[in-house]
Amino acid sequence: MQAVPGVLAVRGMLDAAILYAEETGMRVNVAIVDVAGNLAGFLRMPGSFLVSSDLAIDKAWAAASFGIPTRTLSATLEGEPRAVREGLLRRPRVTEVPGGLPIRVDGVLVGGIGVSGASHEQDERCANAGLAILQHKGPT
Image 1: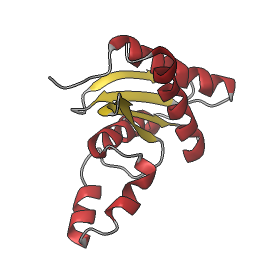
Image 2 (image 1 turned 180 degrees about the vertical axis):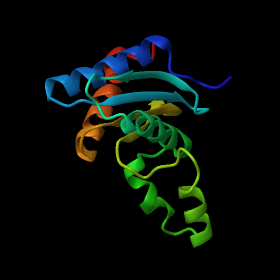
Image 3 (image 1 turned 90 degrees about the horizontal axis):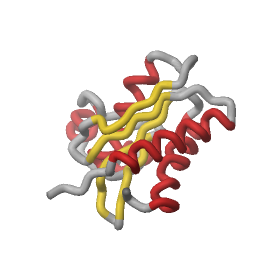
Image 4 (image 1 turned 90 degrees about the vertical axis):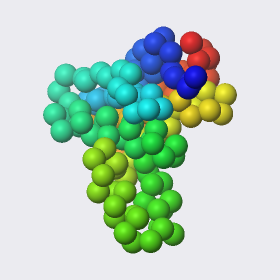
């Protein structure tokens, strides 16, 4: 059986990311997918960019697919042949735009969280705020 983020963990991560965004004046979209890429949770803040809805899901999906932050995807693929790099980066849902982070519970990849709507750095900080809830409450 594959590990998946529990419903309470998903809600906690979404709430923590949105709370961080509100406290810092950002308007973002937050998406969480399980390790199979299925959408487990999504929140859109009023006033956030429409295009950021799909991009948040893409970031979460890419982070879950590769098990690495989307920020590092391009560098990770640097050593691969050009056809592999370009082929992967042209796939739907694969993005190297920062703001997607893998979700791990006890070292096991269980999904990804993606945030979009602010700067890349702010998106990543929101995603990290969501992940931090797992350290405080455990993988409920």
